[in-house]
Image (cartoon, rainbow, N blue to C red; front, side, top):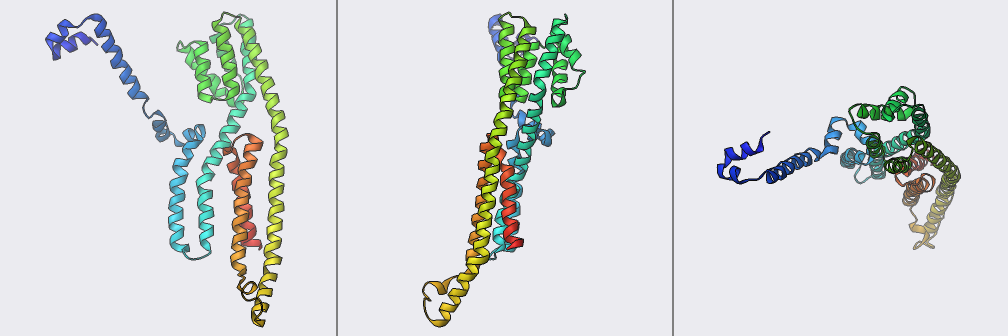
Length: 330
């Protein structure tokens, strides 16, 4: 496009006076503005194009779907349950509806990234071996892209495709790091790119990065095994709590209700024991158990997997257990 002719058509005097340097600056500014406009709402466009894939890549987007659905369910449920004990069930399931899709999305993303990280050392080692055999890095990636690397296979094929269009090996790794965005991959990619720019042997750097990634994964597995003890403790403490609450609800509350009725009939202690309402205390016990289950799940996720969001799935399980016990067994 001839920008100078374009400006002359709008204003001959302006087009005559503008210099080539100013014209280049205007051209760069126009290109930058178009790029900025194209990048606007990229995630929103991806979400509209493929909601499932976007949600599993960015689990927080699941709240955009689950919260409106939960609010709708809450309003409809309250229309039928208002003024009854069923209000508790409506509130509980409203919360569960709002957190279930994000819990699934966070769990699937963690599982997928974990699988990618497991195969990363093998991929780096294979590329290093191909490089030592005399292949260029693009050719080495093209060769190993035909192999099987589990969840990492698609990413390797993506890198191969980008390098076939002229993208450098370092830039392909950086793009891969931005797509997956995990600490291990960022660490490995940073090590490879910095060493490559410094002029080191790429094959040796790839081997070092593979060893580093493998050692980090071993340490993570050891940490996960040690911290899973706390997840088990969270579950066991919750079950002990449920057992105690269930015993109080089935034994202590009825006994207190009978004592209150007897005291009221005899005219003694009516100000204290006679006003005892067993149904009210039963609901209080259920509320306590449900809250304990929800919070125990979050604690289990934080301690066992290092993230409160990973505890959402535990919260769902424990909350449903508490609700089931008080709804069908007590």
